[in-house]
Amino acid sequence: PCLVPAPEIAKKTPASSAAPIKFIITKTVNSKGISAQTSMPPVITGRVLTQSSPVMPPRTITLSEPHNTNLQSIPGKKIAISPLKTPSKNIKPVAVGGVGGSQFKTIIPLATQPNVQQIQVPGSRFHYVRLVTATTASSTGQPSGPSTSSIQTAKPMVVSTAAVRMSVPVVPAQTMKQVAPKPLTSGPQVVTTTQTQQRLIMPATPLPQIQPNFTNLPPGTVLTPAPGGGNVGYAVVPAQYVTQIQQPPFVTLASSSSFSASTGIQTQARLPLNGYCDCFANGEFCNNCNCNNCFNNLEHETERLKAIKTCLDRNPEAFKPKIGKGKEGESDRRHSKGCNCKRSGCLKNYCECYEAKIMCSSICKCIGCKNFEESPERKTLMHLADAAEVRVQQQTAAKTKLSSQISDLLMRTTPVISSGSGRLPYTFVTKEVLEATCECLLEQAKKAEQTHQPQVEAERMILEEFGHCLMRIISSAGKAKSDCASINC
DNA sequence: GAGTTTGAAACT
DNA sequence: CAGTTTCAAACTC
Image (cartoon, rainbow, N blue to C red):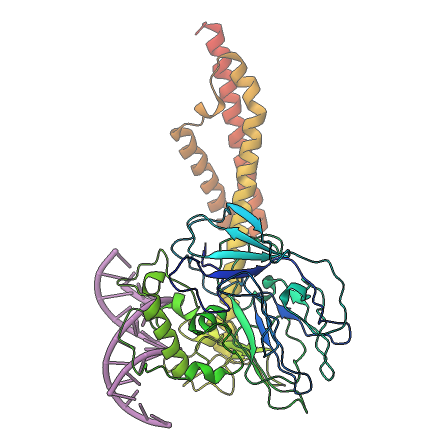
């Protein structure tokens, strides 16, 4: 299981006394500054929303702070909903060193913030903080900090601004199955140290308006501005990448271009930390992989961060899902870049479209594509696959039925036979008896075949013969028992 | 399980 | 942007 700790929203504490603090929202809290006047679109738990209204002074609701447990309000109106778990496409188990389990030692209510509990994780490098207050109803006024913020799991969070209307129900991370189908082991109320991946939603620019329908957005989704909404967009990216890249605390996550702000990293050494690694590509640490000289771990955090930055510099969409929603008129799902297959006809799993069980689209640059709706090759392949599946199901059902019959028969005969001599019923089913039985069954099958019987009739004949065989075995067992009794064996 | 094929991503 | 290289997964034997 993935045991990656929750990502940090703010800068990590230097290697001093305090460990980095992370916040895990497990229960909703209310904000004074969040009123019923403004509703926010759905947001998946574990994302960060940054919003800036041109009308209202920028303000921040930040649910994380690196150096102490006081939650701050800073310009930028930032709502950080930090991490629970987001399922991941990657199937590999991923873990982070230092967090070996999901058992929390203690939960400490913090004096300074009654709605914040500090959670100590044995062996963890991180401090976890859980926000638990869900008391005050929404009220008007300016938010003074996250201690009064209101984020209700699966319920709309309402934020008041003069010109902004937002609705942000915080929905469970399970809704992101399409992107990352990792099982979740914890509900909203459960804090664990396990983690797969966190996703942040953040605006590419200051936001006059948050777009609706955030629910079920896969990471990597870019939300385009609403008409009249200004030049605003959102990018959903793996949170740990964003947060780990942030150096100063409360660095504005407001611009995707911040990733490309160079820190002098021009090239990346050919580490085993690049786009070839699925763990890395999914924003996860390697664990129990077979990789050699792996740098995708906490021990090589610096190199890892550089590599992440390099990747994002080269391709800002590097960590976005490849399968997204197509244009209107096209199928719901399509490859975001399209495939480039040349030899597989897009009918093998080499093809990312075929692998994702979607048709190739107009943006694909494949040669000799046979992965389209009317393709006879594709249809044939589908029929074969369906037929194979049906066969497997039939065989499974037959096996189940047969084993059920055998066990039933044994159960019924056991008391009779074992009550006397103490011999168990299967002692009569010797190898020779089994072979003889199989020969009888095969003989019936041949007979059915020679007489061109339909399959149903053939099955009936074989089963009937099997019944006869069983009866003979039982009869022999009974006879053996009586013989044995007569000679007092 | 070893070797080959394939195409995405990285690189030039 | 096109061609080449590297890589890991898919595939074959």
